[in-house]
Amino acid sequence: MRRRLLALVCVSASLLSGCGLMSQDAGSERSTVTLWLMKDSASQDFLERFTEEFEREHPGFDLDIRIQEWTGIGDKVQAALKADGTDGPDVVEVGNTQVPQYAEGGRLMDLTLESMRDWGIREWLPGLAEPGQWMSQQFGIPWYAANRVVIYRKDLFEKAGITEPPRTREEWLTATEQLDSGGDQGIYLAGQDWYTLSGFIWDEGGELAGQEGGVWTGALDSEAALRGMDFYRELQALGDGPVDADEEHPPQAGVFAGGNVAQIVAVPGLAQSIVRENPELKGKIGFFPVPGKTADQPGAVFTGGSDLVVPRNTDTRDGALAVVDALAGEKWNTELARTMNYVPNKTSLAKAVADEEGVAAMAAGAAQGRATPGTPRWGAVEADNPIKEYMTKVLTGGDAKTEARRASARITELLDLNAR
Image (tube, rainbow, N blue to C red; front, side, top):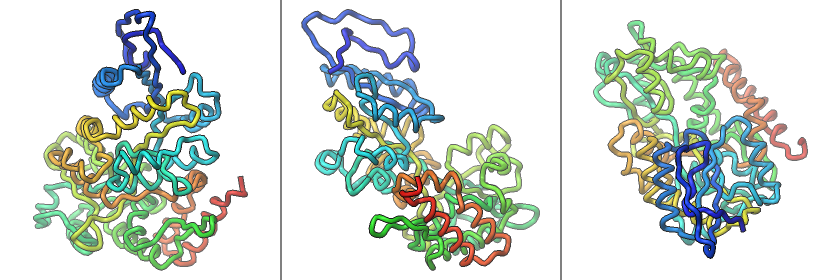
């Protein structure tokens, strides 16, 4: 067990500076719990307060937080999982859809028992909990979520005579058609925004890919998935979004800031960038959940965010579990959500962000959140991304069923575990 001869340990020097140290009494023993967190996931103030309370309530442990960059983190985590564990992380923040690639090979600790007994597994957001599973075991513990909502211009809605945001898909199409007039775009929706398409497919009961007998296959050619694509086509046509590009080419925040776009589908935080580019829009921007097929619940959305995992090679198991218990527990999870405008990891905690319009809309949608297929090979699909090509083909007049079949075949090929 690693020990540090310090009575007070700072959060990693990469995060904090100016922390004083005091010598530890010769007879005492303390263990260090090393926590890897991603840059900007939590504020410095949050981490300082968390560290202080954690060490006070767990006098046998010191907390060493080391901030990581997203770029190249996959290889770095894999290397740490394969090492002897003497100087590696005891808890790691990972993207929610990354858990299967780390769990494959048995290098993460199975946290199913703790999840069911202590951590309220049945209350977790499905978009964080489901991708945290591998082979029916829970390895990733939900930490925070973020998902897309509809960001809209309140003044353009008022100009079009729309008094309240739509709650169903049909209402959304009707309102967007009203907004798409007089030089205004009803919605700016890029043709290759496959995350938004995924929500429509899930709403219809379809999938991007399915698993049977341990074999993954593409599923864009199912009748349900085709209905999702058809709705996307109808909605996308009510604006001037490019059919052969995604939402970052050009960045949709800049397009919205240009002044004649009524709606975009994006995370609420994008509104800050919009106002910076066009200060005249301050106070004119609103948010509502992506509408569903019926008014009683919002539409399904792709849920991004982070899970916490514990490497099997940790030599501070009790300390690692204590850190996960605290970070994912009600007190610090709601505090993180308030501090960073995230969605908490449980639907029952949504009230913690109810006073922030954008985050409240995000939390409502997160209850219907989903994630990409839980296979370690999904990263290969995103790298090649036949879904984007499929969308462009359909939006430029191609036969949806034919193109969906072709894209599904490519997804199946990419998900073939024997192809590595």
